[in-house]
Image 1 (cartoon, rainbow, N blue to C red):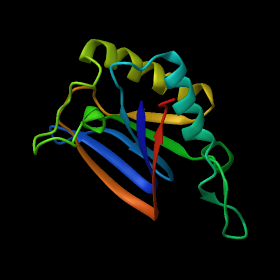
Image 2 (image 1 turned 90 degrees about the horizontal axis):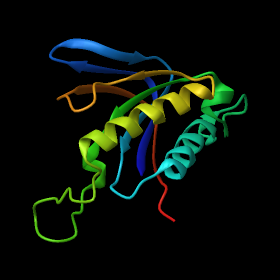
Image 3 (image 1 turned 180 degrees about the vertical axis):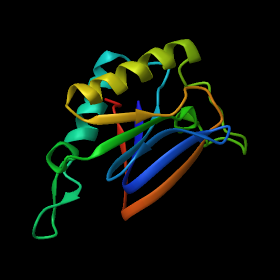
Amino acid sequence: MRALIQRVCRATVRVEGRTVGHIDRGLLILLGIGIDDGLQDLQYVAEKCVNLRIFEDDRGKMNRSLCDAGGQALVVSQFTLCAETRKGRRPSFNRAAPPEVAKAMYEQFVQRVRDFGIHAETGVFGAYMQVEIHNDGPVTLMIESER
């Protein structure tokens, strides 16, 4: 499982011109679910996203987590994070979980983030989406569950 996280001042996701998710200060989490990912991967990545200390404290040091900072999360399914790009010029998505499996895990991931007390908004699984991001920093990190 891969999560590309971006610290944001605000972020919005739209489907067919309609806003389906919006957050103010917090994290945009682009989530890629692989064919071999399971519950342990989901729990690890969710815990890491909400507890990684990437928000500034009173001294300007990245010393606060999303939980500490009282931030929000916008979680967007992003199967292209599972792409294999080492061979050729066309990405292969063979390592991405099938949609029915990925959707269930995506929903579990969002619930796990909410279980930490985080207000979480979402995109629409499988839809064509436009994501508007106002980076804060910018701070962008990749979290992977691979053992």
